[in-house]
Every structure is written in C-alpha cells, then in structure tokens.
Image (tube, rainbow, N blue to C red; front, side):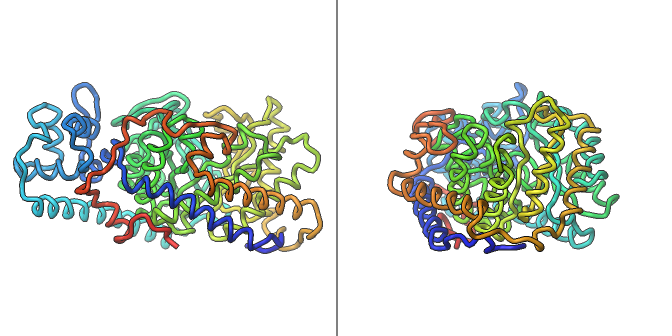
Length: 523
C-alpha cells in the first residue's frame, strides 16, 4: 500500500484530527449523561431476552415501555430486570414474559439489596460478553484455517426480500468471486422503533432479524468451506434500532456492519441526540465483537455536488474516526466510506476521483476503506454503466482501497438478476487482476491536477472542521454543513426515546466492553 505520494500537508492532517477529537468530545459529554430506549432494549437482548407477545410486539420493547411508564428508565433497564429476577426467582426471559402478561410491573417490585442486584447484573453481562468473545475467536480460527480473499475484497449485495432466496443468490455470488455478502434491509426498516422477529419477508430488501442473520451465517459458513476462503457477512446497523442490531450481529457472528455516526440524522431524519447516543453503544458492541464498521460518507455525494463538496466527505471521515476511537474501535475496524460519484461527463473527472480516493487512503492508511460504485449518474444504458463501473474498479485498485462494492449494470435496482451480478463481479475481477500492481509503476506529479485537487480537498476539510469546532456539531448539522441537509438538534424521529441518566444508572456492558474506559478518545 503506497502512502505519501500526494505530498499533502501533514500539519493540516494533524490539526484536522485535533479538531475532530474536540468536536466529538463535546458530543461525548452529552452522550455520557444520557441513554435511550433503544440502548436499554439492547441491554435486555444481550441478557438473552427475545421473542414477541401475542400481538407480535418484541419483548425488549414491552419491558422497556413498562419501565418508562413506571418512571424508572433513568436508572437503566438492567437494574429493574435483575431486581425482579431476584425477587421472583425467575430468569430474564421469564421476567420479560411475565411483564408481557402484565403479571409483573417492574418498577413496583420490592427492592432487593443493591449489592445483590449489581452482582447479578455483572454475572449476566460477563456471560453475554463470553459468548461474543467465542464468536470473535471462532471467526479468527476460520480465517486462519480457510484463508480469505485478496484485497481489495469484493462486496456484493443481495436483497430479494426472502432470506432463503438471498442464500441462493449469495452462494452464487461467492462462487463467482465475492468475498463479502451484504443483505440489504427491507425498505423503511431504519425508521421502525422495534426489531422484527423471526423469518420475515420484505420489499426492496430482507428484514434484519436475528433469525435471518442466523440463516445467512450458516449458509456463508457452508459456502466458505466449498470455496476455501472465509466469506464475510454484512448487515445494516443504523436507524432507530442501531445498537440492537449491533447486539444481534455480535451474537450471530456477523463480520461487518454499516454503522455511521450521522447517516440516520441526515438521510432518515432521526433525532441527532438519539443518533449520537445510539451510535456510541452500537460501536462499543461492534468494536468488542471484532466487527468492521462501514461509514456512509458516500451518501453525501447523492445530495451534494461531488466537486464542490468533496471536502465534506473527508471532514465527516475525520469525525467518524474520532467517534470510533471513543467507542473502542481499532483503526483496522474503521471501514470509512467514500464513492466514485463525479458526473462522467466532467472533463478529467477520473483524475478527480483518483485524487479523493488516494487522499483518503493516505490519511487513513490502516483503515479498511470501503469504496462505493457510481449511482447518481447511472442511466438505462447498461453498456455505459458497465464501463463506468469498470473505471470505479480501476480507481479502487490503483489507490489501494480495501473493500470495493461491486456496481451493477442496472444500478438503482436493489435486486439485480443473477447474470447482472455475475457480469459485474467478472468486471471487477478482470480489472483488479489486470491492474493489481499498477500503483507501483506510476507516480503523481506534485504539481499535477491530482495532487492539486487532493490538497484543495484537505484544505477545505481542515477549514470546515475548524469551523465546526467553534460552533459545535449539533449547530453544524442544523446549518446543513454535511450533505447539504439541515437537521435541527431537537427535531427528527425518536427524540422521545432520549432520557437523562440518574446518578445510580448502570449499563454493565459499556465498562466491560471498553475495558473500564468510558468516553475517552481511544488513542
């Protein structure tokens, strides 16, 4: 992997990182003092609570709603659950089922000794963490035995709406050369304030449920043995249930999660406060589980101009990195996202794409960068689209990207035909193989268009971060500084699920998974 070829101003890079740390430090103060209904439901899921009542309402939702109604969520769901378990002599699942039957009202259960309650909470949390650790060890053992694909990994989407059809398509894609399989979620799931249960069908994608995770994991383990390399599984850890899906993924040994710090705010109008709290806990879980996160800066270029606003992608990457460090993620788990999205009619557009991609690679040398294919300017001309995707693949291998999402001929169709997927993988494998070491043979002129463009992006991102450092991230988002989308701090969906923590609040997983460090910068 080549770095330093653009000769960017390292002082600006260093100052941008300081600004990002300061920006996220202010948000972390708010995060540390608050919790959300989703975070507390996640604690319950990690304790083993699952299933639905007769109305198909998830038990974690029912339990948290009961605690909210009793005015007790500020202390944390773990306390009320463990207290009831001790008083009634029941398991966590049995308590949840009793709450669903309305035979237990958690905040009215007589209080047991706080030390006993805390001890039970810690024992249950340790058991959950042990299970996640086993999955992390199991992944490492499989990779050591089977090996894995050569970088850049080919990331391929399946999204039929039916998990069993997804399995068929996923196995076919792997046999054609895919290294990573992502199951697109059903349309609108990010806006649901609950996680569907069991094997469900969807539209435009397949519901993210724990059972669907389990089915795909089993299938990918099977095909990994057939092809002789470990195949990674991906889902979408975003929206109103961000940490819950992270927990489900950790329990079912997923390998990657789309997990951006601001995507839900900007593109789903989810309340900023809710999102920042939830992304913190979700990333703590992902970090502990050894899951690689993928951030969503590529989306900025769908609502803003890639030439004029390319620097906002880099600024957001710095912020995502800083938030990730605070959540305990290593650099090797930060799949920072960006995209090949400049209008193909723009003269020398390919040079500008190379500038952004190479700049990102140099600034984040240890991150498994995820490079997204063109979408905004794709047309019904599948032949041009195939070439367009080929140039994306070339830019990816030339600049040392780690993960290349394979673009489809008929982009914007979530469920491409199998032959489209095959041709797209074939395109990527051809380009990546034929240009594998091209980067070792060429240099960028220090006074050329590529180097000049890269330094312009860095300077603009640096200046933007210094401005955000002054006004604060909540205000920057409200002004529309990212993606050209304005979102007020107290607006958006889900704010009613934000609660201030009491002095005796306790979530055992934060300390356990961070090794006792909470809210630090992680560096």
